[in-house]
Each structure stands twice: as structure tokens, then as C-alpha cells.
Length: 187
Image 1 (cartoon, rainbow, N blue to C red):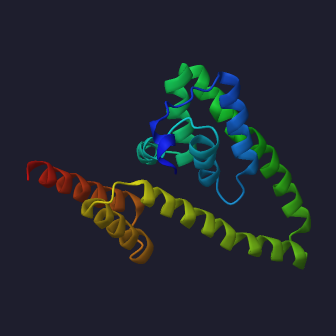
Image 2 (image 1 turned 180 degrees about the vertical axis):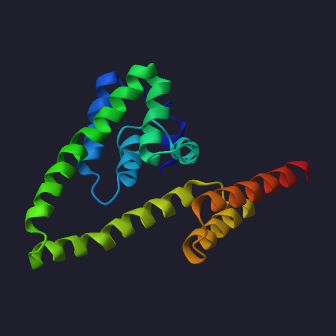
């Protein structure tokens, strides 16, 4: 991101803008909504910078439910209270809910067709690429410290290679990250 965008005060969206933009994110978010939410909030609308988005995502990951929904709730609640949070969530889920119900009906009727199975097979690597691309952009926005990179690699190994359960990964990675920061702070 260009340096000047970090120096500009973030734009405060209206309630309508929260609903409308999160509805578009939900509508376009095939393969995962997080990349679309990040692009909308950081790149297109300038509501937050990369660092703030990373902080929202980090907080959102520790609550139950989809991370992007938690990001929307935390951000919109800060901007417009409970009403803003509700509008962001309704916007985020309105189109996906309609599409998912329609897709479920179509799936029940047409799954046996080879073409439908090929389409669903083609979507999987795209979704994976979107998530990996978002992860790399989030990593790029973190301060380039040994602690950050070490915890990133540790988390990746625990989750992706060793397939350790999520709660265990969070506990181990969070503990290592906090201890490392305490050591750096006291050094």
C-alpha cells in the first residue's frame, strides 16, 4: 500500500455504507469472503489501514463464528453501535444466504451431472489461492520482526503440517508470541 494512505485519516462510513458494502462483500465473496472484506475495507474504501485490519482480524479469530463476521461486527459496532453491527452482519449474510439456499436446491436436483461436479472441483483451488494470497498480504503488513515471522511459521507448521487442533494451535502460538514480546520489551 502506498505510504500516503497510512497517513490519511480513515473514512467513517454511514450506516447505509456499512450495509451496502458488506452486502457486496457477501455477494462477491465466492471462495472466501475475507479477501473481499480486506480489499473493500483497506484498498477501496479506506475505512482502515493494513495494520488496523490485521488487528481486527486477530481479535475476530478469538471469538466463535466466522472471522470476517467478527471483523464486521467489531468494526461496525465501533462506528455506529449495535445498529451498525447488525446492519453489517445482515448485509454480509443476506446474499450468501439466498445463494446458498438456491445452490442447495440446485445441488439436490443436478449433482449427478458430470458438468456440475467439474464446476465444483474447479472452485476448490481458487478458494485455496484466495486464502493463501490474503494470508501473504496480512504477513506483509506485519512489522518485519523475528518474533512475528517465528510465530507465523510456528502457527503454519502446527496447523498446516502437523494438523494440530485449532484451540491447541491458538494456545501454543499465543503463548509463544506473548512470551517473545515480553522478552523483547524487557531486553
